[in-house]
Image 1 (cartoon, helix red, strand yellow):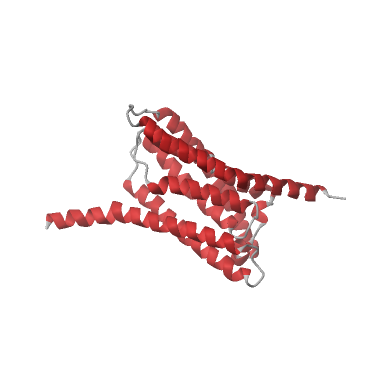
Image 2 (image 1 turned 30 degrees about the vertical axis):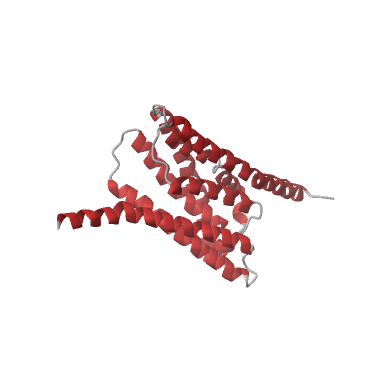
Length: 256
């Protein structure tokens, strides 16, 4: 006879498998919408959408802040009680009473976050490759990896929530017309680079400890996650160079 826990586990696995199959549909619709939308808006006036965007960014900021607190507290609990190695290999993030909800919410949130790009298209702002590439790949990987509840996921969630807290808070303030000091953007960029670097480190540790039988994961998860983090790191670093260093060096050479 199957216990209630077994039934819950089977239900969660079916739900996660369903997410994986739907992720490609979501991403296909997303790509068609944003590129079709750009074509549609080409000969039309841009939309302001300031108030809806403030509410949109504020909602995602508050969600990310709460997620930061909830997952951060659980990560600290694991670190204090079981140590760093267990925090990397831990799977209880997917099943503990509080973190279970925020892990699933984290995965699901990748769908509504696609709406960020809709505002960019309708307001006729510059849509960079990194923006839509990140949205597509992070949704695909998050929904794909959730079904296997692999090691390292706790760190991935705990790092992503605070970065999004700052990003969406920044977006809310900017759209609302509040002047945000330049160091704030540098802090966000530094946190993004640190997140990608730590993601690669966690993947390396999972692979190493998986050989010892301590970290439950699969080679394909580690490979795809590492490629994803590495590509983000390279793209963000290139963007930082173009924005902060190349322009500065160009100005310096003109002044000589």
